[in-house]
Length: 110
Length: 268
Image 1: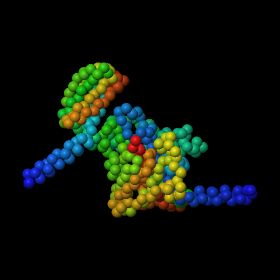
Image 2: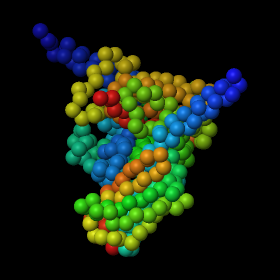
Image 3: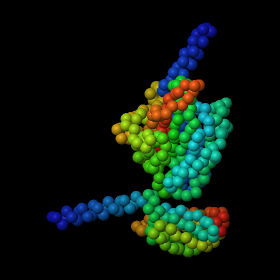
Image 4: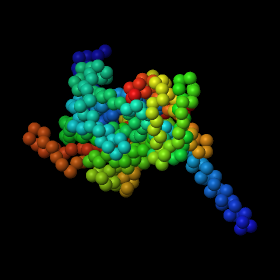
């Protein structure tokens, strides 16, 4: 009976943790400056997305390059192409979001 | 049949009623063109600064504020030079300096708390000067950080409810601070900006008490109010300053208001 009770409490706590995580949407912000694109990935409360996968696509949806965010949620890259870029962040538990960096903004930052 | 005298009487009574009308409250106002800036939105905000009776849409004369700034990521950015007097879109084009506007470009994610400290406004009907420290928060690009931080004004409302992403009917809870300390049993006046959002019918209050809602804070300065309609809502906590100002050689009291604006949307 005690084991059953413990199992129930554990399951309940796991459900709670899962619920908390689901409420946290990930975000990515990017800007181009001095030939580079700087990306910042974060949760709404400001915590960085650590170890998130960043994928950079051109306007034809071709994957140009990818990388991983550091402890501060940052990933920087050289401007791969002067184009409308779609930069995707993929974090754990299926959290995903994207940021569109316009061609004009990329060009201004080259 | 109206006689000259009866018309004169009606005019006099109307003037007296308007002059003595205690129902409408003054509100410092900062209304941004957007409250939540997403990726697809324009990153340039247009901000309107006014001194009005929000429910009745009366504009007061307003000279250029003493301070207009934004706090983002803990840093204060002075925006006073960007404020322009714009008479074209004032609700009363014959009035001078009744509306101030500024454009501000959002460059980074996070919460942007815009605030003004106006020049003291002399209100002869109440025999006081009025200074309304007014704030509004705009969220940008999914980072919800900063809205609960004080600006450091003489008096201000600290939101305890996140002040954006509010549905109609939500409860807004805030705390009134005066010189950084909670104000016990403060009186908070609440008014609906009666031209928001665009296109919906204006509210016609059935009686004076409907114009300005009034709630009191608890001993910790905390108050709540549920907003019954979509649009902009102003919260104004009034206190008397510990300092005086001179008008025509006489010392007069100063009413200092902590004003906060939030926007609600209908669930559709």
